[in-house]
Amino acid sequence: MSGASGAVGSLVGQIAKLKDCRVVGIAGGAQKCAYVKDALGFDAAVDYKGGRLGEGLREACPKGIDIYFENVGGDVLEAVLPLLNMFARIPVCGHVAEYNVVEHKVGPDKMPALFLAILGKRLMFRGFVVSDFMHDMQDFVRDMGGWLAAGKIHFREEISDGLEGAPRALMRMLRAENFGKPLVRVTPDPTKG
Image 1 (cartoon, rainbow, N blue to C red):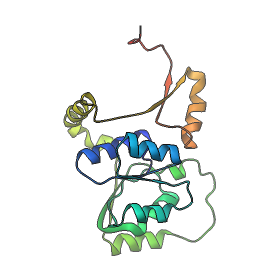
Image 2 (tube, one colour):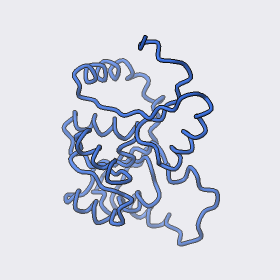
Image 3 (spheres, one colour):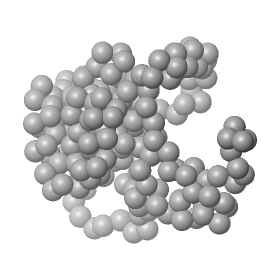
C-alpha cells in the first residue's frame, strides 16, 4: 500500500486488514510509519524517505506481493515491481510522484522493463476510479458505517481555517507534507455549539 498514511491509503489498508489480508504500508518518515503500524494496525510500514526502500520492502514482504494498491508511482513503484508475485493485481488509484513534475528527467526508458514484468509475471494493472463502483455504494456505506461505529476504522485530518489557507493546504499535500486528509474549514463546525 503506497501512500499508506494518506486519506485513501489509510482506509484501503484498514479495510484490507478487516478482510484478513496482511498489509504493508509505505509512508514518508518515521512518524507516519509509526502511525500506519501502531494506530492503523498495518502489519508493517516501510519509510520511502529512509534510503532503503527496496531493502525494507523485501524484509516486510518475504513472500512477495500479491496485491499492490498504487497511489504514488515513480521510485516507489520501481521498488515494488520486482517483489510482485505471479498474477499479482495492481489497482492504480493515483500517481502522486507525477503530480508536480514540470520536466521529466532524461534517463533510461523504463517502459520495456515494466511491460516485461507485466507479461512475465502475468500482472494485472487496472485503473481504480471510485465512480466505477457506484453500484456497490450501499454495501460500502453499510460496512463502513458499522466499522466506524465499532471503532475499527481510524482516520486523521489536517484542517486549515479559511479559504485563504486553501492554497497552502494544497501545496502541503502536493509536497507530501500533510499528515492525514487535508481539509479547509470555511465555516464554524455547526455540531460544536
